[in-house]
Length: 248
Ligand code: MG
Ligand code: MG
Image (cartoon, rainbow, N blue to C red; front, side, top):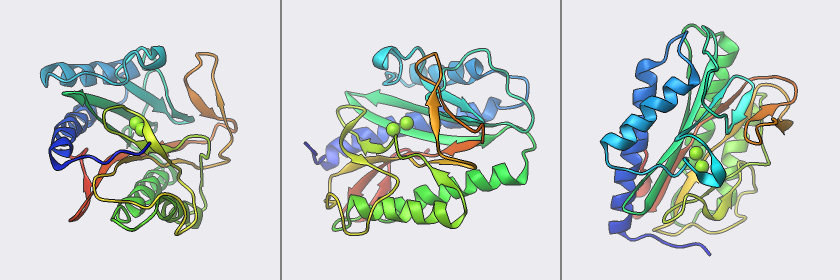
């Protein structure tokens, strides 16, 4: 069942979204070669506590941290810990927050120090794919329009993207209907209405998009070891167009 959120409910989700944006900026502020992925989780946790929010990641099906931290060939769902970040790595930080029962969810991919041009292009294309979907979050468009737009950007760049994992509705729960795939056909799928709130999240790979889950039952990596990037925002469909709720 797809629910529509009121202006008041979206206002609370915006507060949760700002907490998520702050988790990302706090992560970026400490990011440098030599820190480990657990350090990033720690600063995210500090933001959650400072803002009086709750984590929707911690304990989700047993997930042990407030952020998924995925490095290089890790696509999504990396468990933060002792993995040390090196110059030239790229790292994705996917996290969320709950305020007064309302959820927000967003992800960014950042370079660690100096990064090769191909990795920077992978990051830029993934961000552009997300932006292409966001601009279409207007009443009357469809979920298929969002996926088609994202897919076109990724394909034009010569990259590939995950089919197994999708974006999602979000609100009272972290994952609500509908699924929001990063592919689709224009005009197909659910028609967007004012009050729909979606988490859109392209996961793009530099090589093949074949992935496997590691023995920790969480970390999703590319089978060929190629790098991947992941960007996500929580977006409300409003009378005034798309509103990104997960901005500072
Ligand atoms: Mg999500
Ligand atoms: Mg997320």
